[in-house]
Amino acid sequence: MNGSRSGWLLLASGLLLLSSAPLLAGDWPQILGPQRSGIAEGEQLAASWPEGGPPVVWKQPVGQGSAGVAVAGETLVLFHRLDDREVVSALDAETGEAKWTKSYPTTFVSQVGDNDGPLCVPTIVGERIVTFGPQGVLSQWSLADGTLHWQRQTYEDFGALEGYFGAGSTPLVEKGRVILNVGGAKAGAGIVAFDLKTGADLWKATQERANYSAPTAATFGGRRIVLCVTRMLCVGLEPQTGEVLFEIPFGRGGPTVNAATPVVLGDEFFLTASYGVGAVLTRVTRSGAEEVWRKSDLMSSQYTTPVLHEGLLYGIDGRDDIPPANLRCIDPRSGKILWSEDNYGYATLLKAGERLIIVTTDGELVLAAANPKSYEELSRHRLTTDTLRALPALAGGRLYVRDSRTLYCVEVGAP
Image 1 (cartoon, rainbow, N blue to C red):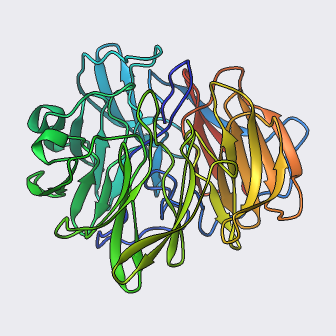
Image 2 (cartoon, rainbow, N blue to C red):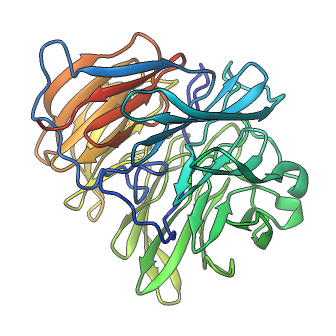
């Protein structure tokens, strides 16, 4: 997630699991969890928190960056910057102690704000980790000991432009391919697939510039499709060949970003962005895709990806840097607002069971019910006075969340 002091963004790193190793219940191996949906599968949250807030199990100092963590089994992977190096660390999820740490040099300076660290959540696929740094450095590491298997300088290789905050679109791993929103428009390498094992190019597609939204993949009508939001489009691609199946206009010129990940709803998907872009619902068809509706007054989120519960979306309408920001529940089928908690403040959301965890950028944790009738707050606790923009992770009943200086492990699971 983008953590510049002026506010915007988010983002990330990721995958979809095509590894032979099974995903453990409670893992959070990529941006927005197992299916890139913000939903913690198999997790049960406490019904409320004690007066002093949910217990902090451990905390560790961190360097620069707004990349949330990924969790697989007993290992947590942190990607941050210390001095002039981008650092990948494997931590013990139980204690926070380092198992191994690897790094490489960086000279990155953000064009906006004072955050010069990584934005993309690491992606864990079986025994491999994929990271993507703000200077376009794509790397693949061993989860066991941090061995660097390969590394690509994607900005140099494909002539991509840096962007406001550097590279920030989390890679997707799908069918043995690392699919990346590179933005090498002039080289016909807007989106590129790399071999997960070797790092070699497998295909290139589009002449689009990159943006900050993390791509995702889903099955529509029996066909696997990658959804990738670029600077001005949402592109549907065949993951093995890179064939462009459809393009949906989405974005605006000027100082804008597309940062939320597409949300899949059966044979449809939902897109949201701020800066006058608005929200779009699109239906995937046998021949491509068709726009169902487009609205600017429903849920226009600067970078928060809404979460889906029983056909309804819960998310933020508005921007982090320019209030107000409203917490809303909407019906994406009808395109109607069911309720709105106005002037709520900017936040990111995840869901487990019937409950939401809302992490506000001003440092609070909120437990709320996924209630379609009204906003129902169950507990609230101030965790920090620092800014929380990195995406949280929920695994094994524990919430992992970081501000600009500290990574916290917080017990939020049901007893």
